[in-house]
Length: 431
Ligand SMILES: *Cc1c(COP(=O)(O)O)cnc(C)c1O
Image (cartoon, rainbow, N blue to C red; front, side, top):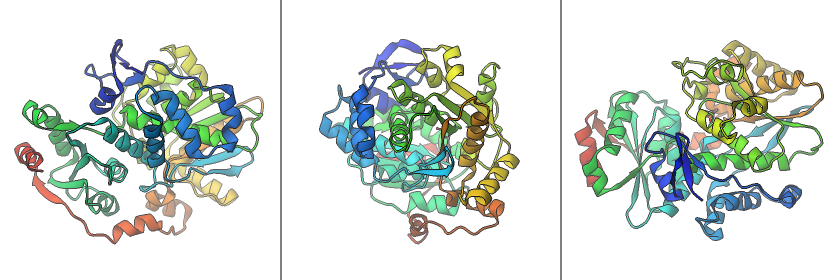
């Protein structure tokens, strides 16, 4: 299988280059040149398969040219170490809980798959993954790569600018995860990482890569849980709609990938907070990046969604097909809090702010349909991850999940550094 750039369909690379480089030289996103359609009998067998068993077949259909079935199975096993339960919230409305991984957010799926695939594709020389983080990416990547052979992760983060809990999640692991506390802000960290990638001297001496969210190795595995959710639905005769709380739109694009592979999904809801460039586009406006606005669903505060061109590519760049299948909705923080409260009071179910945005989009879409359909919204984060907002909105106290509590008790191990590229370079050459 080759992967082409969304900026130039004639520019194609193999799996290894797409994964190690991440982004095409023309800044396009890589896409598989063919999307395999799974056979009808696979869908008949789905309810009887475990999450991993379906993963072997789905990932196999995409990667079997490049990896052995044994490698494919070990990739899936490394990724799916936790469940994604489908929980009924109301009649015909389900929450797909994607937050049962080590850092309590759905990004664990992509980070775990990415780490294992990178380790399989790198040869001889150790691969060094450089990450600049303001919190979330660092913890998902660190936990996903922890203990993976032949890959070392170096995380740069701004001193004093990351929450204690997030800092603990990537500074206490040790092993192949190194954390550097930079005397500066996030942009300084980002700049040092970018400069390292552009430094020919450094790149001639070591193999450097990033675990950026647009990497196909983080993007593709996100299609798996759409199949799993479908397989666990008790009744399948109604039309099915998925509502995806979106920021960079990787998760939604992965859902569309699953649909293109044959999963019978009638519609998608692209649900956002007031960072609504994609809902605006779906309503007929031109796609236009805007500065991002701060909200309580802050993992979706994205003004220039990086996977937008993947959405189009999945429909052969036919905008009318995209607009037919994907409906956009957006919500303010007030609406989000009200939904959290209403659902808690009426059903007892606790939603985090991101899941609540998706719930709202799902309800509005379903309410406008002529016939009843089945709806699934993606719960992308554990409510405890957004503890202050959830406790304040619902007037309850949440216990920190044991997995997070355990991080708080471990000792932080970091290397401190000035905001100085040459110091960073010397450090990289010394490890
Ligand atoms: C990253 C993130 C999102 C947005 O996902 P995209 O794939 O960027 O659209 C939504 N919810 C949570 C909790 C996230 O961490």
